[in-house]
Length: 85
Image (tube, rainbow, N blue to C red; front, side, top):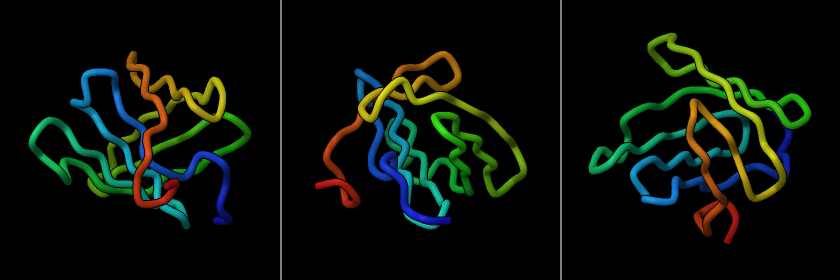
């Protein structure tokens, strides 16, 4: 997978859910104190993202713009992280 403008850290307003979209289609999701609650792969098609975690569970979301992600009833915003500082 080639890099795209959505690679980076995405966080809910309360900071509880954090998605780190890594280059080459991998992600790490943190939930609360669990820094690696879920890991897996993702694919972006246009502004749509499909996730498949390493256990086979799948989810999806849509980028509203380069700073807002709607995913599973949550709104995540881009934050400085390893990939986009």
